[in-house]
Amino acid sequence: MQTKRVLLLGFVLLVVIQLCLADVDDDRQRNEIERARRRRKEKLRAERAERRLQKEQRLLQQLERGKRHREHRPRTETGNPQPYEAQPPVHNRHRLEQENLRAERNERRRVRQEQNEVRRNRGGRRRQHAKKLLRSNELDRDERRNETTRPNYVCPPDFVRLGNSCYLLSKQILAWQEAHHYCRDMGSHLASLETAWEDGNMRDYINRKELARLERWIGGRYNWETSKWIWGSSGKRMGYQGFSRRNSNDDRTWHCVFMDPTRQYRWAHKSCFQALHFICEAPLQKELPPKDNNEI
Image (cartoon, rainbow, N blue to C red):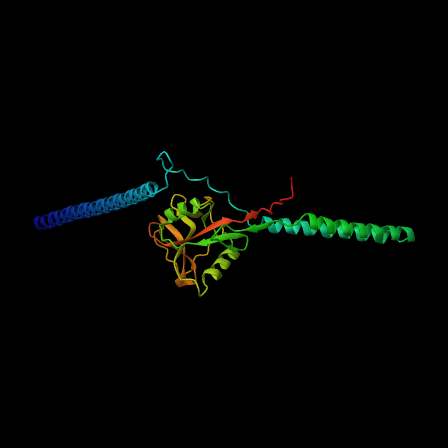
């Protein structure tokens, strides 16, 4: 009986010791997991602090570039820097085409009404009267065409007309923001290629053999607050985007859009602080008719 009690007591002690060792192992594992979690949190805090420091450095660089650009601005007679002109309104490139189509449509409707009147007047006198009416209308129409000549639209000096807009390929190499101010000083803005037709027309033009194959800024930039691509001249969100499919999906903060000659001038993006050539865009200007010296 005593041996049985000793064996039972030893078994109980063995079970208690195993339970204690299991609790010790659980506590050790919990401590290791907690230490690993703390290390991860510290690493994330360090990475966030480093990103915040990089953003602040970029902002300081941008402010220094803007300050340098303002110091080189032309000054007035009093010595103060000359203010920038107001931003030109966004030009509606399809207004002229719409007006021409509307005028042709009204002209066809009027001619159709005259023809219907002639068909209704099948009597002799009515037919003669209708013919006279048609002749008088044709004469009036010819006179109106001669009196209301269409105005002539031209581009500013050094600009080239493509479609219903004017473009200037720069000879200077500037950062995106400096190029933006340069175009505004000329009464224009960085090119906004808002449709596939405008983009293809521009790519065909700059892909000519007589032009150098250069990287050129256009007016698109990345808004990191909304995570959207916008046009810098108007602040509107891009509807059409001509980016190359080979474009990498890296960090786009402080990135702007340029036309890449290595990708058949499809769009790409890089840091806005790099200096590149650029493309300015201006609306067509109505050419005033020459003054008649005989007028009083």
